[in-house]
Length: 127
Image (tube, rainbow, N blue to C red; front, side, top):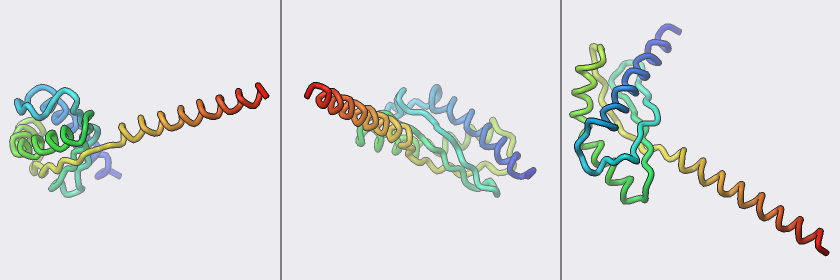
């Protein structure tokens, strides 16, 4: 149990720092305001950290942001090493998280189904 809370604290610290870095410190024009860190997942041995990123935009914009983050990975890792007190600074692996877009899409579909049902019921009442 102790290790899980430690990893959880490490994840929280890394998440906080990477969010700050992405939001305010990266100068790469590819990484815009519509980029946000959703969560981080560090391995037990602290060698790797998956950074899940949400990007609002089309496929080209998402690809561009992911390339920018990958290029900035060494710089971000260096800043994490300075700010988070760890013996080993994990290697950062950036992953595109599309769960927010998926949720929006599902909500649109549910709304459409509900609207279609209301229209059908309204048509039946008029008969």
